[in-house]
Length: 319
Length: 308
Image 1 (cartoon, rainbow over the protein chains, first blue to last red):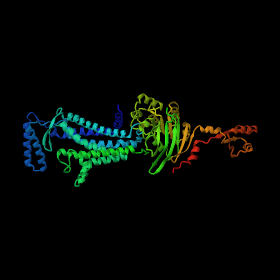
Image 2 (cartoon, rainbow over the protein chains, first blue to last red):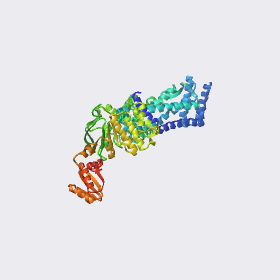
Image 3 (cartoon, rainbow over the protein chains, first blue to last red):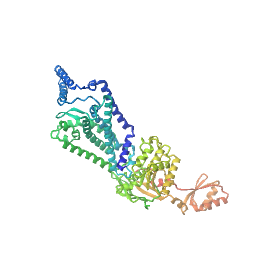
Image 4 (cartoon, helix red, strand yellow):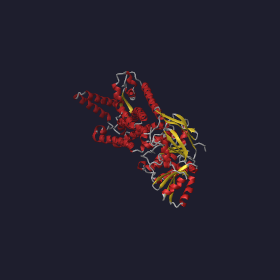
């Protein structure tokens, strides 16, 4: 094994040997399984709507039913929602695509938002991975080895990203397995009709899930870098977790509150959501994907350089 | 083998404009055990932290087998094993997992080597228990184990006998001496336990206010005994008054404490005096030369445990 892999193994070993890490996986499992149980019990509509060979007639009947109920009810929200259902059904009919029965893939797609929770876990891990060594006093035994401090810091950050990736894969496989057991699978690579910025498209569910995870990963990596930096500079995991979670939950609100000012487009959280360029709902006029990516890279480099500067130059003194 | 294992060259450390270490210079040869003592706040731990690269040096240099801890860190660190302050290990891992963890940070440490070290420090029976279940003494042994895994040329131990029972202290002491004598390891030990240091070390440096104020070889003491200088001798006799006369006949000043007579005389004179006393039928129950212990010297030199 190369030196880097041995060090990475060390960090992951220290991470996964602790119960607090397993609790995170248990929470994820509980939510995914619990969600499937609740759907089975309460959401008969989604789970049991099965389309037979005769699906064209069934969709038409659905549309008729919706239009009829709309004439009785004039609530604007209901109209919008139902009309999009009608349009979706029409898209199926126009393009001769049979609607997909509900199953594990769609369950996974619906649960893609859980990566937000992973974001929370990754912040906790990233905030602890340097600060804990100081709290335990083990930093002294770690930094007297024939390995540069830069290398140790780098492997620690790599360990956090590996943790994020493992957890994301775990979430994906767990969703697919639980969804498959509860609702059956729709096939190897099912496609689904989804509404996008420029109308409906027939897209691969796997691709959509990966895209969704991918966009969330951007946010996740940036917050990890931030928590990691705070943890490294202040050697205090609570502070790093606190700030990390606050920004994870409230970053968008802060940015919205400042959106009247032009400088707000340079704030990290105005740029972490790259999905805005796909949906067209851009935070501020004139922002482009290139602009956001540049801003993100600048922030990322800044976080890393600050962490590195503090970690490698610091005197490790007594507690 | 390099002639000098560890060298400190005019090492200075300034923290927030206060000069904590004011220029330390010493060299330690392979196989030598160097004791580093001083009152709390004298700068022992700061010096040790600089030796192992945990702290930056403000001035000067530390060299391990000729490699600078500053400019050739990896080469220097490869030859250092250390416990800095308490041996804080990963409490949620077993002793074995801790050793494996640190072994992965070097090249070429085999499982056989780890097993060998485990039995050396006597942890065979508990090596698969979690460290949080260990007593302080067991942690101290595990601390020593991680410090010697990679067969360092220089071993730096901060309070190595802290928390050990007398048998454990003896074992560690014997082990340190063996490392020094058989494997030619240079050992630096800091401690408050002065009697311990005296038993373990070849040479002792006393540090106060960031300066070495006294340095001496431990076996210098016996040389001194043979020299012409006076030593404190206590005579325990039956007939004190007559005995005082014997001594005063020889122009020796005597202080009387009940039946014990305290004198300062040349060692060479003792047999002669005893013979005279016996000839005069004075019962001599005991003659005790009092060596000034290191502790007395330590307190004398450092002026007690005062932090300035």
